[in-house]
Image (cartoon, rainbow, N blue to C red; front, top):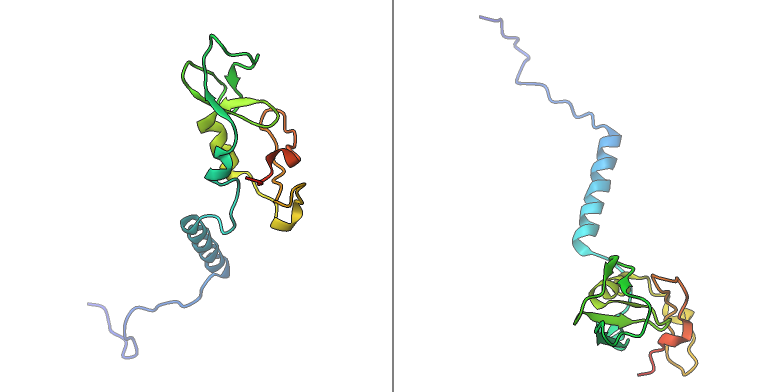
Length: 140
C-alpha cells in the first residue's frame, strides 16, 4: 500500500488556460452563431423583384436566340423548362439564375438613384457581367 500524505486531498487540477485555445473556442462559437442566424444584412433581390423579370417556357421549335444552354449550370435548355431573361437578353434556367439573384449583394439604399424616383439595383449578368443599371428599376 502507498503512503498517504496528510496534505493530499485529491487530484490536482490545473487552472492554467491556454489563451490560444480560449480564443479559438470563442471564434468557433461565433462562427456557429453566425451560421445559425444567417446573413445579418439582406442580400440580393426579393422574390417579387425576381418575378418582375421576364420568363417563358422553352420550346426548341420556336426558340429564336442562339443561346441554348444555361451558363450557371452548363446544361442545355430542354422543352418546357422555365427560363428567365435578364435585361441584357441572356437566358438562364429560372431556378439557376433565381438562386444567384437572391444572394447577389444589393447596394445600400442611397447608393442607387433612379430615373423615376425609385431605387435602381445595379446588378450584373452571370454570363456577360454587364451592369444593368437603370434597366431594373423598382417603378412597378
